[in-house]
Length: 230
Length: 106
Image 1 (cartoon, rainbow over the protein chains, first blue to last red):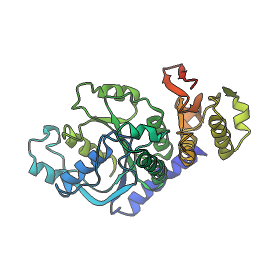
Image 2 (image 1 turned 135 degrees about the vertical axis):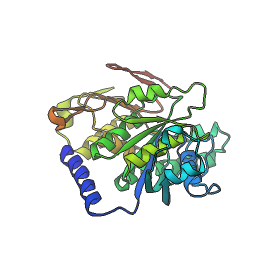
Image 3 (image 1 turned 45 degrees about the vertical axis):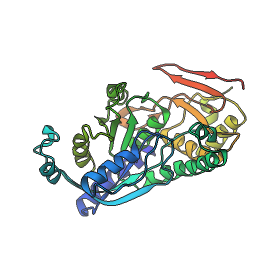
Image 4 (image 1 turned 180 degrees about the horizontal axis):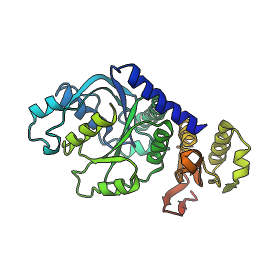
């Protein structure tokens, strides 16, 4: 039954791409809390839409994003981007890839949310409880959105152990649906970053080491997105 | 700790299975499923857990191995899954063939 569901997903997308030219694809940015999802969403919008437009706010407190945020109509045009930044990445010099997408920034997926953890960041008890309640709703919303997206950009913190069950579950779900997935190994600007660990843990998927904050390798990620999500 | 046989899990429907697991975990048990859960079932379990998170029940810790694909990628075979209450399990570690947990008695 699972295989039938997977085949149905693959064939319906193939059919849709042959019969209809999609206006835009919905790409969900998923990952654990504090992996840098909102920072990446902001980076995408800053690069291709408006340098001053933020999708959301990122802080060191986990579960800062507690509602799914959708930024529609982002045109990833690597030709135009290269004209503006000709020396940003030599590997993408000949790229002419284009993609129109809706960026879906999702709350961090977690299996536990304890209000006491927020109090460690200086939040008052009532505020911590409110945040915890909103965070649980955010996780449910992020899971529900999996039914409505066309591909996943799975963000992992390359300074942390990648083999967490939430990462495994997201990948397993996407594979079962036959959906494209790119793994971005984020925070490579930090000294204890080991993106190779992520590549070793998930060898069946494309892993792009990046720093969403500093912009390291970000052109390679855009290139991979334009190819995988077309 | 509850060790649940593959046969017991196969006798239940998907939702019944998840309810059974979550009720066991909420009662303070570590639940070990011989036959494991699919990634879709695990995602549903996370969703169900989030609905039930409270001050006394902050959620679950879960660990397991990805499904193995069968002949011609046709059938997936789920493998061992361990689930426990997040306020009891201090750490849960997984290696190639071994899952180990450190449990707090507080």
